[in-house]
Image (cartoon, rainbow, N blue to C red):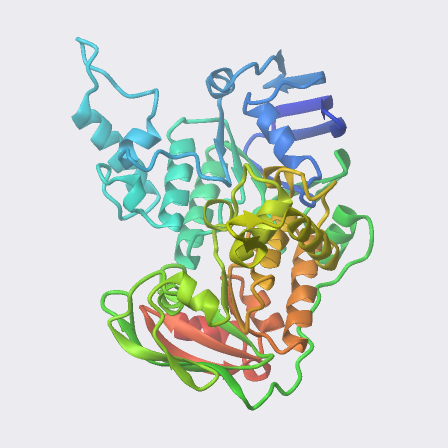
Length: 495
């Protein structure tokens, strides 16, 4: 028997100044199904979801919930209609507890109107247990890892008892173990009749969890397909981008025998222990392991963000005393951090100012910045990295995720690094933008820059690395030449 249609979107249009974000978009979602919404960055997925969440209102078109036409004029109306949303960008207050974040604005109160703290704790504990989350309800969100905060977002949506839950890149920063728990939860919700709109750029997991997929391109609905055995990932990608596309791989060659970076016996108590590796000129060294294994923390020690307890770092054979990121930058190390919006960019500034902010000293004379030189450099790197922006004056927050990532990389390339650390370089960006990042990595490798790439996507690690180190609980548990490696071997050593 055909499932009841819980959501129907008919002919929805939405424009912003100079941009038509949605053009006659239609889709339907059935009760008890996982419905993937796919498309490149800028295809209109986020705009459509914000309309369903009551954040934006459409210019025209109709929305039906359980067969009844509705107007979702604010987020509360959307929640009251049974729609919950897990945002890719975390919408949490770091200074409040887990339970306060989950039930914000919906706190249970007693007879006199005061919040019932015991009941709030118990309700939160029940939800966390369902999701097999080990944190405490009264723990401050700011103390949690990015992966744990993502799970709090998921718990918040589930707490609404929603009929329709929108999940925007829910696995972008969670561990493999947490992903399995999430998928188990999704399957349980599906059996209970909850509909889920699932947005992800990870094609393998779309085929694993989704029943059907609606594909968007340039603000329009292209098609909706059942994800059965007759559909391939290549077909879906071609529909998303409007052309045949396949992933770029690293053109492996014999890297130089000369070592650009050498790390010996690096230890930071409670974080990482006895880390030893060399990086050669032009080599791409992949760092694999579960989220929380210590991969990022090792790189933070090398870059001078965190203090090491013991160990030696050498650049081009010379021992270095790196006490701060400035020391690392002066020695030729760049670090593209995992969270580009919080740590890599100043979102309110222009593309040009973000690109040149890392070399302001070089652009200054008598404390005055040479604006012409700064603009010329920004334009040069916009062209070199094919950053899609109307001009260098565009506010960086208005760019797609892939173009924001290229702005961060451009910023570090201006420092003329010998070593470039890339932490989750393709997190949350689409297949087309990923390919552009991969091509750029190949070009940098050919120029002799040593690259360290942390990634939770094993196909990416295998595709782009010359060598692979596996990290578990702050220690290196394996080292492979990528040509003799597999996902199974990596996971065996990561677990």
